[in-house]
Image 1 (cartoon, rainbow, N blue to C red):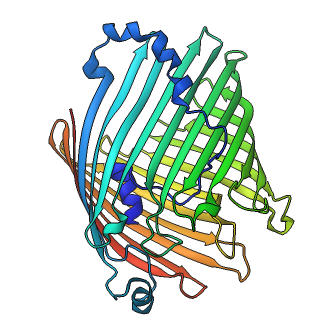
Image 2: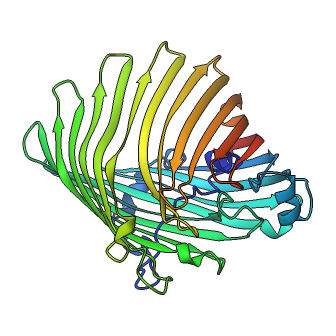
Image 3: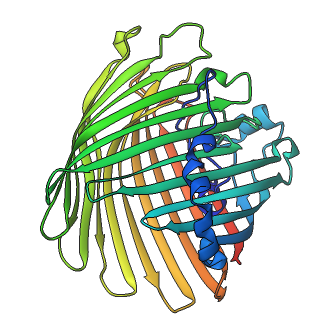
Length: 413
């Protein structure tokens, strides 16, 4: 989708999964996360600022033949007052990336401000931001891990609203992961994450959510560098703006993960879980089943790479008829470095989305996109992405198709 393309290029759009938001007691994560930076500021004097901080700017022109994903001319006329569903818009972004090594510690992050201007639907114009900060820490030879935070403000996609609604979504996340070395092969894993999401439009605040996740497990390191993880995760989700807790749930994920270097040219990684989601106040919505993702990379030559992935996952988005969907699909991608200045990327994706509701809705989604990157100068790139999307549903009014185009320029200083 064009929304996906925008995210890929400028990070100013969001995916449709509601991320949690807490209306109470939110302590801005940067207050504590920057503490180690303040202690170690003297180290910056010995670092090359050009290597530590990398400013960048970008601009892009976007076109979408059906921005609001409407099924036909009749729906367009009723929703937009016209049968024209096409829209074009421009995105601008400026930011700074950070890679800062402090002895055995490593800080990475970025700060970005962005602006999107629509040609026809000016009420959707907005200014957004996107930041992330992560500290990869190491203590002695036994303890290591990471702690970090992210925040993003962007316009919500139109996948479910299907109209020019200026709904801004703020997503925040704080996470911690730790690894305790037990011996040369085994590690104990511990982690926690707090996700929060809020919607600006009053008609969408019922999707505001909080999710607290706690993780534990073990990791086995093979002599050849592969990894096998034994994972156990519990997530507690709530919707603080809803008058009753009917959609709150607890989800359990237990399974394995792996990162296997099969040959010098082949790598397979993924995770497979048995997932159980319990709705204590609406047990008819309970779900249990297998979820996961398996992805294989094949480096055919030094210039050509192929990727194949299969996946099945459970998402959360509340509509009038459902509170979640189960998506399973397959994707394929080919990347070719044609010359030192030109790279080409071709990908295809096919998903089946089951809403598990009444009446039973099942959608089929197909995506095909082509991307070309041309390096004009060492730090200046021209990007072109063309995409075609088709969604068919067994419930009338939910099918659509679109064509999108993006031309963008970005420069790193």
